[in-house]
Image 1 (cartoon, helix red, strand yellow):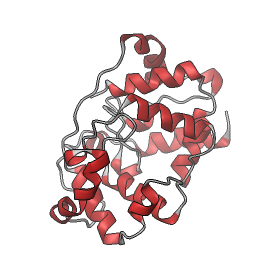
Image 2 (cartoon, helix red, strand yellow):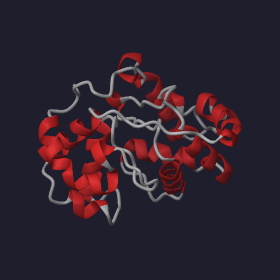
Image 3 (cartoon, helix red, strand yellow):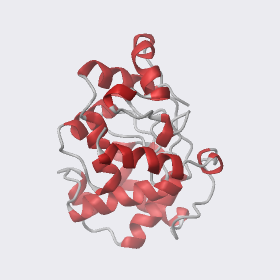
Length: 213
């Protein structure tokens, strides 16, 4: 098991909080000084890809509704400074001020997320990885950081993944595995974990997570 993955296990154990994971999506964020009302107005252009109130209907564009505000804010900063390379999001984030990013993050965090559905075939492969990991390959349980229902941990910056589109999930896991996405310490940890996953496991986890709620 690599030191990075050990770090992930420790971070998950320290950062996992039942109170935070169980927080309602619509609750005000205690982590940022954003204004959800201001964010709603600023989010008008986001709807073209991410859907009304952040519930995207296009499987390659992520749902932003219910996403932890610290994580959403961090990703906007990564898009803006180029540490997360995305030719679509980079020009969208470029003109945003720090306050804009906080407002948007808080707004989307307050929106209820639409549910997804997992394929039946994915459960047999993915559930044991999500719930218990694969110790002999150094793969920690996904639920350790993302929670039993995929709600994430806003305080620790671990994103909500429950209900997220399966196609988007697979794209991101493959990007982590290929080393194309590793911005920030959590991104580096995810790239180390994803490097141990097979194609079948990535496809199964992507679908399984879509059905968590």
